[in-house]
Amino acid sequence: MLKRILTRLVVAAGALALAAGCSSVDPQVYAKEKPALDLQRYFDGTLTGHGLVTDRAGQVQRRFVVTINASWQGDVGTLDEDFVWSDGEKEKRIWTLRPVAGEPGRWRGTAADVKGEAAGVVAGNALNWSYTFMLKTREGKRYDIDFDDWMFLIDEKVMLNRAVMTFWGFRIGEVLISFSRP
Image 1 (tube, rainbow, N blue to C red):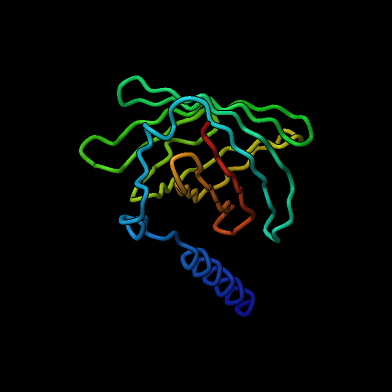
Image 2 (cartoon, rainbow, N blue to C red):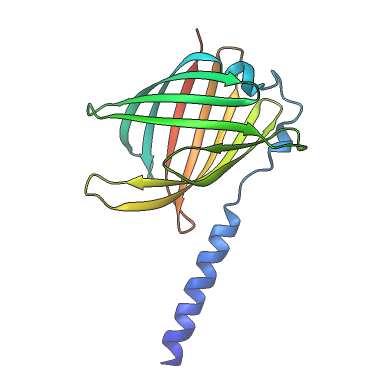
């Protein structure tokens, strides 16, 4: 009995250490990188993204094209996203972005399938979002998936996006997207 309890404690401690060891990079390491990302300038008008979702082994599970119609009313941005998946499924997501008052470079984002608010930090050419996505499966189940979402401005037209997905602290896959502006 004691051996079983100790084994469970060791496994739990290992899982916590693994989760803590996978923490995100500090966005400030990119503060001097150019071109500097201006969210209101880049996400304005129509953008196209081509992406894929991989599992934890790196195998591609799904591919997609997303069209984003982005607009701003003062400091409040709306990203109206229309996804077309490789299997023909269509999906819509609307993000609302707001700067955090008194905290330059910090942003908040909301969407119907995001739990609470996404917290974002812009530094140099990078944007890092942290949020919990409420994934609904085709079978009707729902899972809260944590995203460590990084976007890097390559030039005035291209941005690359890499998001690592975790569930209960364990890495389950990635989303990779290349965004482009006309």
